[in-house]
Image (cartoon, rainbow, N blue to C red; front, side):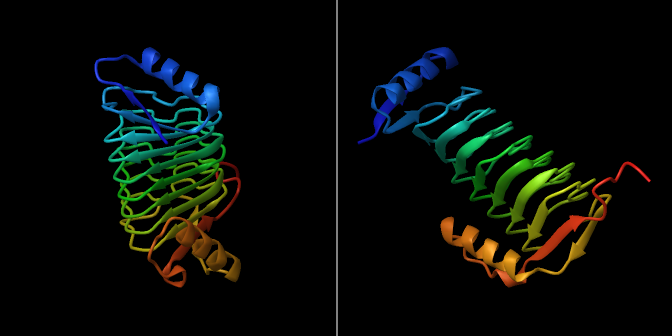
Length: 219
């Protein structure tokens, strides 16, 4: 049975201490409610299953290193910033900067995500169930970015490594990026992602974007 932390009227330090004590005691699931005002909630956790009942603030799951964090609502800016392991799952939308600088783990946004999503992704799997804004996937270094819907301007700008898969349209592509055919490996991978997150989409209808060069700043 999930234990509950009511964050109403409490600051980040108090709520974080409660969370860590509950997780250390016997693991299990913890639900946090009334947490919209808290920025940096669930930062640096190494384990535990945390559900945010309602919307979250900014920097949710920053430096996550193994926890499973779910938001039953919308999330603010910079979700899962610098995550290394674990997962952050958002049932609604996120503001800009979701999944920036991630080294690993999974970010899944069931709704739409804002500008600069997956900037400098260094190895995470980042899946957006609807649309994204501008400058998404900028300076990606590794990992997968899956956009089920449409993307804005300068998608994948200066892509260095990694893959971007798009089910809809994009307004424009950035520098050092090209479209290339899907392989059977790509299709199998997308099917696994879709099955895991209950996404109803045909992986063969997606387009794949990859870097023109792994050294775009050198001739």
